[in-house]
Amino acid sequence: MDLICYLFPNWAPRIRSANSRRDWMDNSVESFAYRCLPLSIANAHGWEILSPCGFEAVWNGGPNPDDVAIRVDEGTAHPIVPVALFGQATLTFHVEGIMRTPPGWNLWVGGCPNIAKDGIAPLSGIIETDWSPYSFTMNWRFTRANHPVRFEENEPFCFFFPVQRQLIEAVQPHFQSIEAAPELKAQYQEWSQSRDAFQADVAAHPPSKPSDKWQKLYYRGVDANGEAQVDDHKSKLRIGDFDSTAAAGYASPKCPVAHSARGQQTAAAPAPDAPTVALSKCDWMIRTQAELRGLSPAASGIFRKEGVTGQMFLDEYYARNHPVVLANAVAEWPAHKLWSPTYLRTKIGDALIEAQVGRTSDPQFERYKDAHKQTLPFSAFVDQIMCSGAGNDLYVTAYNSASNRDALSILHDDLGMIEGIIDPLAENARGMMWIGPADTFTPLHHDLTNNLLLQITGRKRVIMAAPSDTWRLYNDHHVFSEIIDLQRSDLDFERFPLLQGVTLHEIILEPGDALFLPVGWWHQVTALDFSVSITHTNFVWPNDAHSTYPT
Image (tube, rainbow, N blue to C red):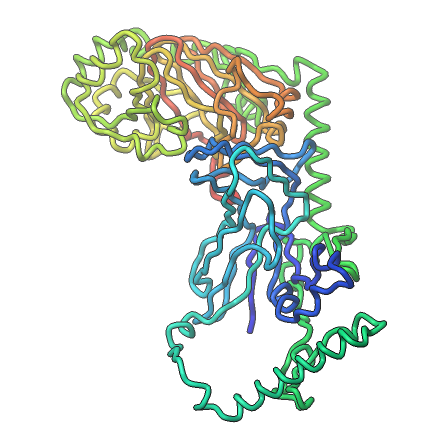
């Protein structure tokens, strides 16, 4: 049967056939543990996936995702690192690959057999991989609080093998008296007597060779009389490695870590054109280019520019993936002068709108936006956000724009258009609106499209970091970082040491300005006043990077 691992161009999972060796078995007296053939067969009965990085994780005993702290080894360049995703003391590894088995076959997924790890245990699952179009995760659950757990780079974190889906339900288990199988009874009794005699002889005459100290009947697949019982008895498995011939240019031709004769990990030199090497070179080049740009404020800074034409914007910023503040870009629009809380309340009235609510009680409110959606009259929304200390709890965001399009369309007459940059004929030509009080906050993240943020009313502080600093920003899930706020006074630089090398840009976006946020640029946003903003993604040039984003 075929077991296929489908790869996107930037996926390079470290998968290898499993090995029967275990360090603790090697270290047992006279390698005694290997006399148990079922152990060795189980050890090798599948494939292993290796960790792309070394890291340490600690669980503090709490139920939430942020109760698990993960510190990845300094210098780790791999984009896929372990995360605390689900809470309940779990640690999650993302697997780069979509597995496919023949019809009726599943994959059993779990930890490597007969390996224990102090303070954490693997969770097992069975996945219907004959139809599922999804990748999967491998999860571990902490068993001890405040106990650091260490995974080394290229240490196996996942083990899998195929199982037939219908087989287990077709099994009819029974108890029967041994008298119903007289031949089996006789074989067992012969073996039991021969074992007792063998052990007595070993005790009376200790063999000089370790191999003579055990009977080896099961190991050889024979009964007490030395007769083979089946033709396909296995004392060793020979499982094939994944063949990448059909995926040339997508994955490493072989796992970068092979087994030595004793089962220890040894580095296997990848082919010169292996994508793992190409990715490393690409990462090196990105970092080098960032360092060179840092030598010149003119090359690396983010500046305010007035009178930027469409062609200038394309040549100097859009095509170069570099931010810019378009000063006074919307200062002449009626909205800039009119959009006070009172004006908006009067104009929109009691029309129902959707907003994000209850954000302050959830540290991960931005990741779980759907859980915070609520519908209320716009007049009630304005009344609440204008109360003293309203803060970050209630906010109309771009995520609510589809639901709010009809209610807010009454404001369109107050808007203009940025000619030569924004497409006036696009489906959502008027953009996506943000309305909220001072201190609303959008955590650190990057977007999958180019964005133009128009600041209509109030001011916002934007903290930005270039895509070349992604490896320093602890990107733990999708477009988010483990660090929610780069300006917190209590940032733990011992937990996040790479942060100290990040170059940050701080921008105060004034009313009437527009900020170009290029795809991939990290940013977090804080409102300094009552604020109304509009996000545009409908540029006159292609803006579809999201379609090729590695999920």
